[in-house]
Length: 377
View 1 (cartoon, rainbow, N blue to C red):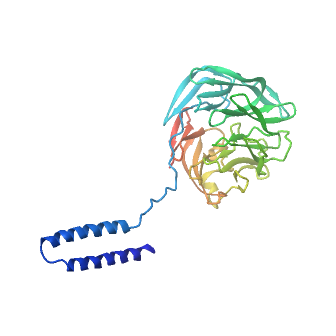
View 2: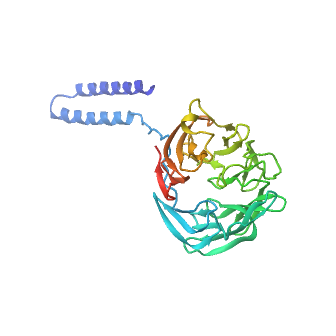
View 3: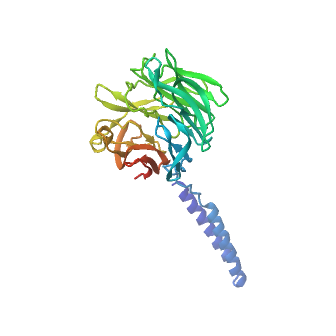
């Protein structure tokens, strides 16, 4: 607002100079030419004097579709899988038979899996364990990573150059970090099989829960993969509840984590959102009148973070019923990320798989068992 008077003053000064210049020119054609030149100079001066208006930044980042990748249901087995590329999902047959599918690394086209379904338990809570293998896709060339029946779960680092896994020992469960060169380190111990790697691959979020015979207070923790002390983010206790596929859900920028947990006193599932640096944590609530419109029974058990950091995509109330597809809901958070202020159901699904194009569409498993895209409202 303060630049407008200055611009008017410049225009007034130029107009005055123009009047003086024209007054000093005798009549005739030369005056017309000079007047034209002066007018051009005035136009150039005004153009130069005008302030530059910066473009208004977009409040919602526009991201490209995720890299093409292979998908199987978590801990699924067999040789049938889905290839997700762009907005098209294609069924493919693998060159190997998988016992339990863990993860796929698009950057290296490598599958992380168990050669057979877990048929025995190990560790203090007798969790199901198997071996650990990796295989190239689509060739199927495979190699063993750990052959002993001691692996609870495993995930690729996003760059595909390292992996993390939970090892069962007779006395505890250990979180390991292993590079492709075979360097293997313990990052944390006495954890539950509810964990995930940050989008940048530099931190791992994990839980300690009542019911897993673990040492240490229940809660949500993070630990750096480079090594160092763990940080406790929340006291939330899942009590061993939820689905085998539930994970701490990282925001796309890696600054926040959402985690569902069991609230036995209230007889429902809750949801906490914590800053990944440990600076804040909130037990998310519904704004008055919102809960009955969106879900019944509690918070969404798993979510995808919208790129804007203010919306979550997750299942709605049908999840708590017996069978049938569940509502897929776009939840809006308040600025403090502590209250769900609105929600819009925009489809039904047997499962929300992942983002297709973050902020624009998601992959879902539909009622017929097919993987399809579902656009956001």
